[in-house]
Amino acid sequence: MMQFIYLAMTVMFSLSEQTFPLPSDVRKSAGFSLNSPLIHHMRGEHSKVSIYGYINASTAKELERIIGSDPRVNEILIDTPGGEIASSIKIANLLKKHNLTLTVDGRCLSSCANFLFMAAPKKRVLKNSLIGIHEFSFPLETGRGTRWVTGNEAQKELGSVSNQGSLSENNALRKTIEQFYVENNVNQSLFRAFNTYISNRKKSFLNEDIKSENSTKTCPSFDFWILHKKQLEEIGATGIEEFWYPKNSDEMKLAAIDNGFKNSDSLYIGNASGLSKVCTSDERTPLRRLRDFILGGSR
Image 1 (tube, rainbow, N blue to C red):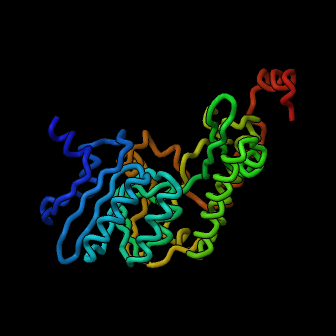
Image 2 (image 1 turned 135 degrees about the vertical axis):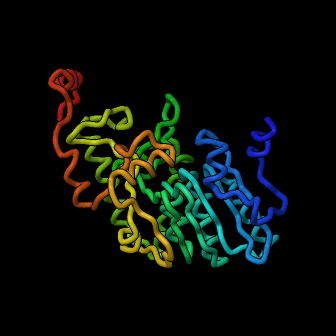
């Protein structure tokens, strides 16, 4: 019980080199179910900060406080599935402003890959660590609650929102994203390629709620696209000093399981051309096509 309480708190005191927990150490104790970030700060000649878990406003605020109180911080170690876009961009700007090294010890997925990894002046990716991108999700308020819109349809759907406050908020967020990419010389080609894959998958099943559809041989369900060093450099990542990447499918499976995935089937490894060749046909069963035709959903 005491161990759980300790892990559920941000560590505010100094830690020695021997007791400083890497994100992978924290993961072994805390598991993958925690939503609140766990932050550890080690003071020293070369101070470090370890961040584990979902990125939110408190993550950015605490990291900014630590850097402000300890100018010797020169490295951020991270294991995260991603998190809030605005908070991730704020952390990315801190990495760039203070010339910090980003060391990935586990997962750097979603907004971590899109923003933190792209902005950090120096990067290290340790063994069994994965850098993964996927499509952006934007909240769309409906009469029945919040629905997350994705893919190339997001702009169109958000444009039809009657709630002007929600529309303005989403438009402002999209502008912030675009500004970040311009300022950091990020080529969005791979992000767009994954968005196109999501759009094609929706069309194949004639369903906007694509997460509810199972994976098929010709239209597999990928949660993330795991990028290798060359791909990251092609979209603008610089300063990669160390980079681990699975050499074969067995290493990929081990890395996937180590990072909380049931297996590696939901992770895409390959190029944009290969991704564009899946989900190009109608994946609906004959009975479902008939039902959609009767309901007016035939294409």
